[in-house]
Image 1: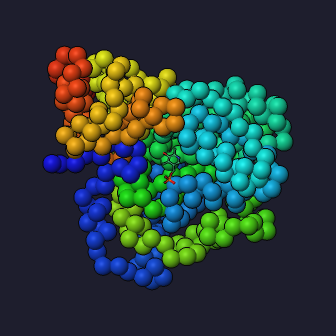
Image 2: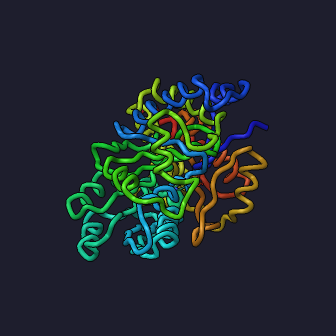
Image 3: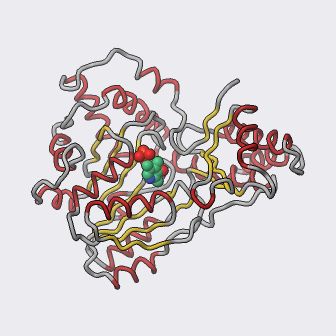
Length: 379
Ligand SMILES: *Cc1c(COP(=O)(O)O)cnc(C)c1O
């Protein structure tokens, strides 16, 4: 059976990217590799829309988040985090670990924080040194208006703006420089169409100044100071995941060839068709501010998640993501982040139809697939 992955990380890897990683290993301190890294650095600037450095670290996305927090803040530093899901919650855990002074704003799952609320929070906490945002909250499939949030924060304070862009980069419009973010992170196994193992971190001038002016914090491998210093010479402080960086060069080449605006609009189009397909099958959508990376859907009334997932996976070769925490067994999430096209959306909605039909859920056969077709044909 052909297996198809519809999870928001890891995401499918294109054949040419996989092939590029099958070449014999090269040494990371030779000019051949440094040239590749230089190209990767330039293409990452294109992707993040920045003239500032974007460093490549050998760790998963969370390592990038930890690098940012531990490099910018120290004990006692007050940092505001927004917890509207598992990943916003993670910012809070990191801040508590490294500064012990976290102001955590809870947001209802499936909804986005509003700029006015951020401005209010900064009014209550004028001494906040940073605000941590999540552009696309993967656990709830919810996108925040990062442009408006950055503007509200910049107007109210000098707090650094840290953006978890892990499932947003490549899916949602994002302009690191123009929007005034200080840190933005993504991971290789999300919109970059790569296997897991790399974190990419954009660092603003303000953030660089802070990182460089402070004496070393209790950190070592994840030091942004070390990474930035090496970045300037198209190098890395430690042995990088050479193979992954070679694959990343190919993946970035593909994204650049498609054009970033086209990549964003493809994600918006696929997300919209996916939502229409699910709704046509009588399923309710979970998020009031849907992400273009992942679509969370309520399981139909009376449908057991384990049985549903088994038919989807074993019977149809389709892997989707489960709901988390309170929503485990109640929602599931369909990813369209990275290497996906129109026909992929027909596959996943078609497989949902097979599964619902198998389970005896009443719906009109073909209605989901037809809705997806119509969405694309109307475009
Ligand atoms: C996947 C993800 C992370 C965590 O990344 P890891 O690579 O699993 O460490 C953080 N934030 C968001 C929004 C994610 O989707």
